[in-house]
Image (cartoon, rainbow, N blue to C red; front, side, top):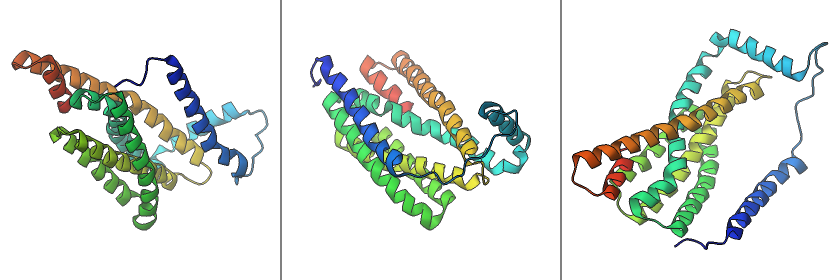
Length: 241
């Protein structure tokens, strides 16, 4: 069941989103204090030229940061999978289970609620077991719902899969950020988090592109080689991807 045809509902949803972001950001503006002391710019420099010079120094000294480079390569790969889940979760619900808009909204709410729980729990896990072990655990937990999804044909199971995926994916994301802080030299944390952000943005189009191509090609293959309906071929193609 579609939630109305009135565009006002969509506009109000955007307003609600803006209010949510404003409320979430308010504590930062009101109570967060900057601990770093501002540094004076060298003579003849501005922030832009200084930033590029520091980047140049970092690239020249990349051998000192081999572990960080290896982590960024690993992050680029596994973050592709995370983004596939985030971008195509609702689409899979509609294609594989015939879920309507209200059901998909409930699914996304479940994912977000368990994401909050996962972020908190994995914060405790990192403090206890360290970053690398926690990251391995979160990645394994992320693999479980993806494999389960391939064999699942129940809407109830899909909701449970969404809850587990939401719990795990924020664990992966939060632990990954913690790992960046571990690798960052003193005074260069913003720069290294910048590399982390660029790597994440790069994977934001690689993963969904791969998924889309795989799903499309697999759907065509099922339609051409098996006597099944278009919907069944599309479902099989999405499961393969």
